[in-house]
Length: 102
Image (cartoon, rainbow, N blue to C red):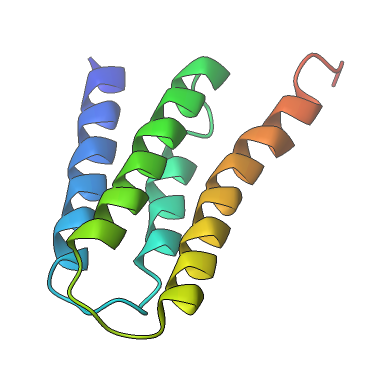
Protein backbone atom coordinates (compact mmCIF):
# COMPACT_ATOMS: atom_id res chain seq x y z
CA UNK A 1 0.00 0.00 0.00
CA UNK A 2 2.85 2.40 0.77
CA UNK A 3 4.38 1.73 -2.65
CA UNK A 4 1.12 2.61 -4.40
CA UNK A 5 0.85 5.82 -2.37
CA UNK A 6 4.44 6.70 -3.26
CA UNK A 7 3.85 6.20 -6.99
CA UNK A 8 0.62 8.16 -6.80
CA UNK A 9 2.47 11.01 -5.07
CA UNK A 10 5.20 10.97 -7.73
CA UNK A 11 2.56 11.02 -10.48
CA UNK A 12 0.65 13.91 -8.88
CA UNK A 13 3.83 15.95 -8.31
CA UNK A 14 4.96 15.33 -11.90
CA UNK A 15 1.56 16.29 -13.25
CA UNK A 16 1.59 19.48 -11.16
CA UNK A 17 4.99 20.37 -12.62
CA UNK A 18 3.67 19.77 -16.14
CA UNK A 19 0.62 21.95 -15.50
CA UNK A 20 2.72 24.84 -14.20
CA UNK A 21 4.81 24.67 -17.36
CA UNK A 22 1.74 25.64 -19.37
CA UNK A 23 1.41 28.87 -17.38
CA UNK A 24 4.95 30.15 -17.76
CA UNK A 25 6.73 31.11 -20.97
CA UNK A 26 9.52 28.98 -22.38
CA UNK A 27 12.86 29.66 -20.78
CA UNK A 28 12.12 28.80 -17.17
CA UNK A 29 13.76 25.46 -16.40
CA UNK A 30 10.80 23.48 -15.14
CA UNK A 31 12.46 20.28 -16.28
CA UNK A 32 14.82 20.38 -13.33
CA UNK A 33 11.87 20.13 -10.94
CA UNK A 34 11.30 16.55 -12.14
CA UNK A 35 14.42 15.54 -10.20
CA UNK A 36 12.54 15.89 -6.92
CA UNK A 37 9.91 13.23 -7.62
CA UNK A 38 12.68 10.99 -8.96
CA UNK A 39 14.49 11.32 -5.64
CA UNK A 40 11.38 9.99 -3.90
CA UNK A 41 11.84 6.78 -5.90
CA UNK A 42 15.51 6.29 -5.03
CA UNK A 43 14.87 3.14 -2.93
CA UNK A 44 12.53 1.49 -5.44
CA UNK A 45 13.43 -1.06 -8.10
CA UNK A 46 15.63 0.33 -10.83
CA UNK A 47 13.16 -0.75 -13.53
CA UNK A 48 10.44 1.32 -11.86
CA UNK A 49 12.76 4.29 -11.62
CA UNK A 50 13.63 3.96 -15.31
CA UNK A 51 9.93 3.80 -16.17
CA UNK A 52 9.31 6.96 -14.15
CA UNK A 53 12.30 8.67 -15.81
CA UNK A 54 10.88 7.80 -19.23
CA UNK A 55 7.48 9.13 -18.20
CA UNK A 56 9.04 12.36 -16.93
CA UNK A 57 11.14 12.71 -20.09
CA UNK A 58 7.92 12.62 -22.11
CA UNK A 59 6.48 15.24 -19.74
CA UNK A 60 9.52 17.47 -20.35
CA UNK A 61 8.83 17.29 -24.09
CA UNK A 62 5.11 17.92 -23.58
CA UNK A 63 5.96 20.92 -21.40
CA UNK A 64 8.11 22.30 -24.20
CA UNK A 65 5.29 21.87 -26.70
CA UNK A 66 2.59 23.26 -24.39
CA UNK A 67 4.34 26.32 -23.01
CA UNK A 68 3.74 29.79 -24.40
CA UNK A 69 6.63 31.34 -26.36
CA UNK A 70 9.43 32.92 -24.40
CA UNK A 71 13.20 32.87 -24.80
CA UNK A 72 15.18 31.80 -27.84
CA UNK A 73 14.32 28.25 -28.96
CA UNK A 74 17.97 27.11 -28.95
CA UNK A 75 18.36 28.04 -25.28
CA UNK A 76 15.10 26.30 -24.36
CA UNK A 77 16.00 23.10 -26.23
CA UNK A 78 19.40 22.91 -24.52
CA UNK A 79 17.72 23.46 -21.14
CA UNK A 80 15.22 20.66 -21.80
CA UNK A 81 17.95 18.30 -22.98
CA UNK A 82 19.97 18.96 -19.84
CA UNK A 83 16.90 18.26 -17.71
CA UNK A 84 16.43 14.90 -19.43
CA UNK A 85 20.12 14.08 -19.05
CA UNK A 86 19.92 14.90 -15.34
CA UNK A 87 16.98 12.50 -14.87
CA UNK A 88 18.76 9.66 -16.62
CA UNK A 89 22.02 10.45 -14.81
CA UNK A 90 20.25 9.64 -11.55
CA UNK A 91 19.43 6.20 -12.95
CA UNK A 92 22.97 5.61 -14.21
CA UNK A 93 24.54 6.61 -10.91
CA UNK A 94 22.40 4.09 -9.08
CA UNK A 95 23.04 1.42 -11.72
CA UNK A 96 26.77 1.76 -11.12
CA UNK A 97 26.44 0.92 -7.41
CA UNK A 98 23.92 -1.92 -7.62
CA UNK A 99 25.19 -5.43 -7.00
CA UNK A 100 28.24 -4.32 -5.08
CA UNK A 101 28.76 -5.77 -1.59
CA UNK A 102 28.37 -3.23 1.17
